[in-house]
Amino acid sequence: MTITTGKGGHHLKQRLIGASVFGLGAILVSAGVGLLLFPTTGVVSGSPSQDIPPFTDYACLDCHTDEARLKEFAAEPEEPEESLSSGPG
Image (tube, rainbow, N blue to C red; front, side):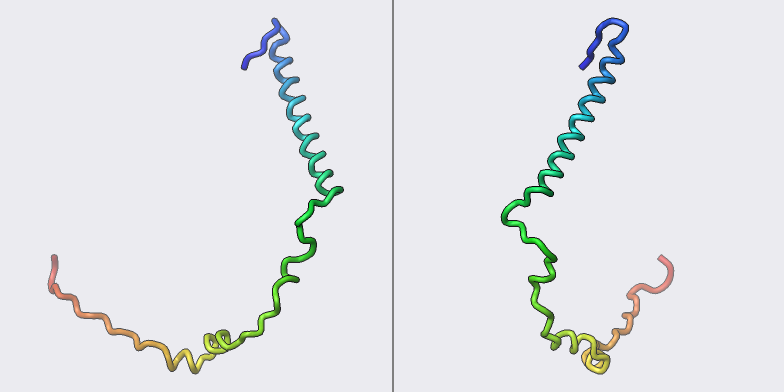
């Protein structure tokens, strides 16, 4: 889009861009203020962690952090198999 009106065409384009950016900023600020002043319905206020029941099932946690059980159920490390090829290449 090229707007030219003689010698001042460049300045007119800059003014239009500046006014557009300023207007968009004003609209966004107005929308933010509107959202703060008029809360929307269906939005739960407060912390989401308030809705989560406390953790009470420690069976898995106890089993997976018990060092004696981990060593008991640990798999034996496998020894590396001997390579089928011998020598270079």
